[in-house]
Length: 111
Length: 114
Image 1 (cartoon, rainbow over the protein chains, first blue to last red):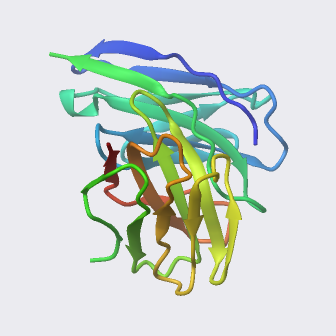
Image 2: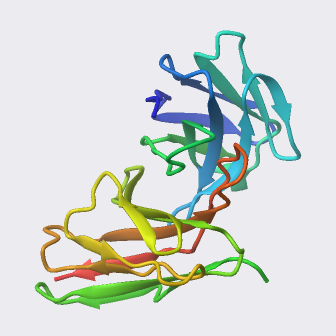
């Protein structure tokens, strides 16, 4: 499974757009990129997944450049409730499906 | 409601005792997983099972054991051989079909061993 690197922490204010970038230089051809959100003392929650270009859902957007060696999770107009840890993971759609979580990015949203 | 349940939410044990953590899902998922999380850290995989009656060790399986006798259930036993068992334990499940990595997590069990 490819290793990922993301910032340890980020700060933002309510109403701002937050972009969290993840580096995954060793991503394999059949790997997908997945982002999870975790609140304290809760299990992680799936946010978004993509393979290339751009994916958007009701919560976030995921931007993946052509070389796929990085990806950016974009959270539009964050609120205090978006304060959480965000994990970037990469993995293939076959074989071992268990996820490898790094330490994630701790996002703190202030009023 | 479909989902994953873990019980109990908090568990206290004396050192040297085995303890079993419960995980049940009614999502009809084939795959189930156990993760451990220490304060300020990411999740680490203990065991996973992609089908009933089959399971594989994850990255930190030593001192743990599992069984998968039913599709819905994947209990984890923390044995006395686990040197530092105090942690937050998370169970998850997912489909085995397609490329999706969407895992559904339970609420977790916080185990304290003294």
